[in-house]
Length: 350
Ligand code: 2P0
Image (cartoon, rainbow, N blue to C red; front, side, top):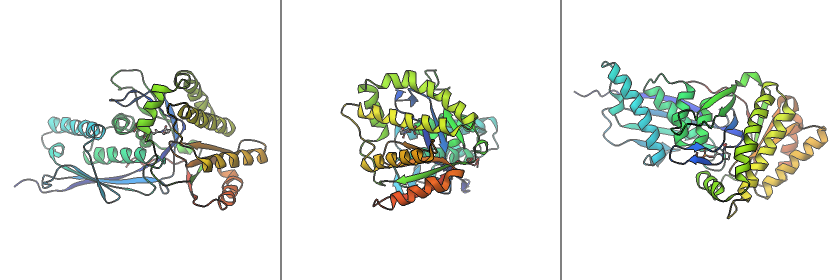
C-alpha cells in the first residue's frame, strides 16, 4: 500500500522594510534587480506570515495554497520557478539516499495566514514568499542556508529574499546573468542594534493602484532620473548605510533612509505616466517627522514609504516617548490611521 503519511512543516516569516529601496529589474524573468537594497526585519508578533506546508502520497489533488482561508493560484511562472527549484533540490537528496520518502513527487498543500493587510504596501509578498520557501525547505529537510534559500525566494518576489534573515539585511544585486550571486546576506544581527524600533502608520489597508512589479518596470522604461538612482546614488548609499549600521549612527541611518525614500518616490513621480504611492496623509506624516526632529534638534525619527501610502517610522527605544507619543497624538486627529509597533528582530530559523 502507498505511504499514507502526511509530512508537515511550519514556519513564520517576518516583514522587512527597506531603508534602501529595491525598484527596477534588470532581468524580469529571473527577477534580478537593477540595484542592491537594504532592509530592517520587523518584529514577527506584529507583522508576519505563518505558513504550514504538507505533502502526502495520499493527497489526490494538485498542489494548492490557501491564504487567509482563500484559495490562491500557484500557477504563476514565479511560484512555479520556486516550487521547481525546491522539488529539484529534494529530488537530489532522494537520489543520493534511496531510504528517503519521495516527497518531491507528492502533491503539496500550503496554508498561509498574514496578520496584516495584504498587498497594501506592507511588504506582504516579502513575508509570504519567504515563509512559503522556508516551510517547504523545512518539509523537504533541505540543507540550504538562508542565503541559498534567498536565491529561490527572490524568484518568487524580490523583497522576499531579505525576509529570510533577521536584523539588518542586504540584497546584493549581483552581476551574473544567471542570478546565482543575487542573494541576501546579513549586514548585522538584530542584537547588534536592539534599540531600533519601528512604528507603522497604516494610512490605508486597501490594495494599491499600481502593483510593484508593474510600477517598477514602467519606471525603468520611462524615468530619466532612474539611471542616476540605480547606477550612482544607490551604490553610494548602500556603503554609507552599512557604515551607519556598523557604527550605530542613528542620525546617518535616519538621513539616508529618508533621502532614499524621497528619491525612490521621485522616480515614481518621474515615471510616465506618473505613479503616486504617497498621498496627503503620507505627506502629513513626513511633516510630523520633520517637526519631531526639529523639536529634538537632531534626527531622532526617520520615515520611509514603500509602494503605498503607509508610513514606517524608525526610531531608537530611548526616544519612544517623543516619537511614538507624538505620533499617537498627531494621528488621533486623523481618521483612519492605525498604529502598530515593531522592533528590529532576529528572524527565527525554524
Ligand atoms: C523594497 N519594494 O525594497 C521596495 C520598496 C517596494 C518599494 O520590494 O516584482 O513586491 O515581486 O520582485 O518585491 C516591492 O517589490 O516586487 C518592493 P517583485 P516586490 O522593499
